[in-house]
Amino acid sequence: MSSAERGQQAVTLAARFLESRDLEIIERNWRTRYCELDLIASGGEVVHFVAVKYRSDPGYGGGLDSITAAKQTRLTRAALAWCHQHHYSGAYQIDVISVIGDLASPEFDWLPNAAGL
Image 1 (spheres, rainbow, N blue to C red):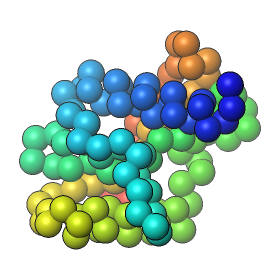
Image 2 (image 1 turned 135 degrees about the vertical axis):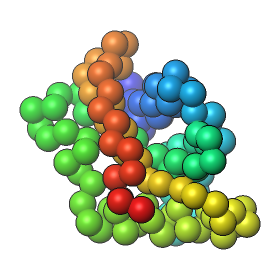
Image 3 (image 1 turned 90 degrees about the vertical axis):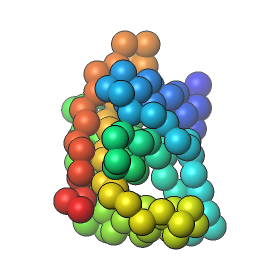
Image 4 (image 1 turned 180 degrees about the horizontal axis):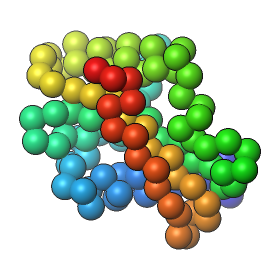
């Protein structure tokens, strides 16, 4: 399985994880020429823009560790681009989900409101 296929499988697993917590997936793999968002979900009156990170072995650093200040800025810009494109002006937050281990039985680490919006 290629790394792209593993990444897509991790996004699918993260979507199921969010759905099990009563969030509705609005879009998957939303992209523009300049940015991308792995998942966009709705929970109550808040839209969640979700970055999904997969790590087969957390010994090399967890997925949440890969969210640098620069990555937070890119995620925020992507969220704003989605809001502009969809004429959305409500509440939103940026979340990060780390999918860890074997994809057949992964563990999840969810950091809601990772960018502190």
